[in-house]
Length: 227
Image (cartoon, rainbow, N blue to C red; front, side, top):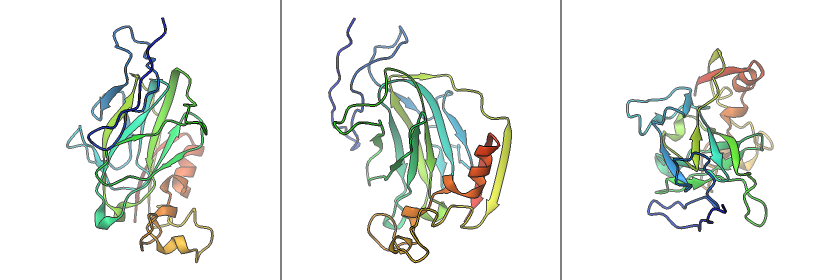
């Protein structure tokens, strides 16, 4: 049977429901987009993370990444950013093998629709199985972020994590500082990525630093400690 289409609705936390159509395959699911909290056992965490509150795992460290597999044609991520000193952390969101989308948090907003879409706003995801990874681009100087969970039709059991593990300890190069700058003296190197003075947070990317590149090449988990 044809499932009903869902309309986009504003949420009290400043986000929006991201699904365009319900497509959970679990017979026990009602077909609507579901919220899966951060303590769901099917969500995998990698890196330096404080998990003393399993509903709000907190991480200031660079290149922390969180992964899940899901069914559905839409996905939203729930993140609370510390907004330290009026600045923000930045994140890369990877859906399947598509290029990453850069996520810029907004003050007082928790839920972000990260569904890849075409120019007309239509989802690029089939109503099937997908993977999502959220990676923290910025280092601890920008403050911490709290992960609150995902929204999609149905969460799936994860793939086994890589058996190899690499820990990388280093300085700002290890954090990926300036790695996306157009030059050493580019204006973005003295900005915070949202139009105010900073150290270049907008062009820092721990996920492209040498340690993570090496870990990916060796099919290993990574754990970065850098400043």
